[in-house]
Length: 571
Image (cartoon, rainbow, N blue to C red; front, side, top):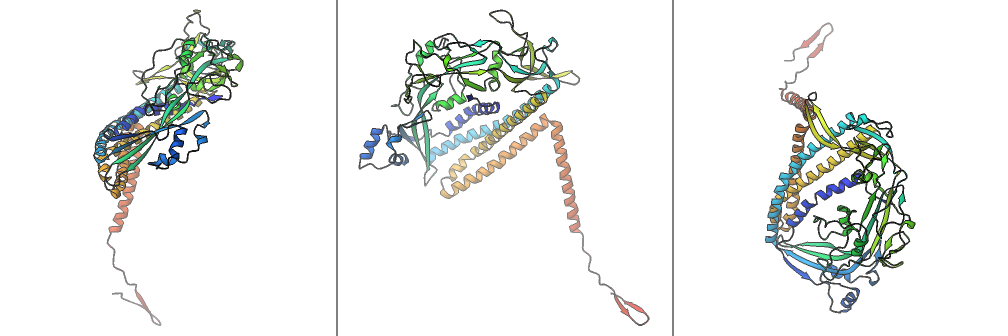
């Protein structure tokens, strides 16, 4: 079975995706824009070409990639492992950036650093405010949620209220299949909450590796970028027909267009332009940008009969909470997958129950396709803190299978005896398994703390990086001197680290005063009390050390006679 990432992993991926445009800006600014670029022809374009090069007695390696080529095992050039094929074709681009070029780059980095120094504190401030509002929403759920003991018998009195209930997700005796068409399953599947069809194509993509060499004199750099080809399965559809840096490498569409026409569902509109880098591997792009399963030839179907007790579970709920309803995918039984498709004779069913154009025992080639059928079963427990609403009528039958449904609840936090209310947005909590209200509140608090800490660290890193970029003009000038360059970079990094940390702590402290005044003033009072006690003890110690010391006193001398005791004067 294929298991999806848990909810926290999905949140981490989303967070990383939100910062990709900013990272792209940094890379574009730091690129060798005004460099003198020269492109060398491919060193090795095929196994036979490699043999010709090695057979030449005058062959002398020019760089590290040439040296590596001397030790290539011909039997491993086209070796396939784990469904991936490494190609022998490669090309190398060498870019030189002299001292003047690096100075211009450092000026651009200074501007970017100034922007980061100005934006990062704003992001920290917004994160602290978001954290406080989220804690208030969670506290609202804790205080206002009505516990429904028996989800099979919901009450009309709770309509519009925030409720908590736990039960088993089921579709009863309903069956499920995909959109009618040649690529549909042979018979409807019972006890299925979701059924999906994932179409993948074997395509080429570029991978790059860089080697940077600093000039001995000056701040210039020479960057050698080696582009290689990699083939793998991707659900993102056909990739670029010709690779950008390897024009001799092409991608075939295979029967993908026929799959689109035979999928039984109309092809959706063209997707919006992606902000991801163009040379990103397809499997990484598929991870960071989810595949649209509603776009042909992909397919997905969700049961309309899903419910927990007397509460209907709509398609929007299932799609918005994949960690709960789509976390466990199982392959469809092989007998439900068609053995062959008359309109697509290239497809055959393999031993795993997939439709593919790859013959048994052969390795996949460019343009091959594979269709996987999977489903998520019902019968698992789930817990909800949601708003109870009246279910909408079925467009086809006009009646509702269940009277009530669930939706996100709006949080209105009342103050001053209800005279003032703050709109904190909407909230709902859905968890897989059986959890009472206190357990769900505790898990929500832990998730929120984790997200807040991650965002704080990201903002702190951006702030330190911004200060470091502000000093880039000085580090570039110092890098012209071989010894002072490394020392200067280390010194400015320490300065940026200290300034960035102080700014981060200062913004967080001010945000605490704004969003958590009682806690902030309590901390300040405690810190002031401790500081006062320390200062008081230090002052006492200082006063004791400054008092004058008296001269030593000579002890009296006693003289013993037979009958009298006489004491001599000590003076």
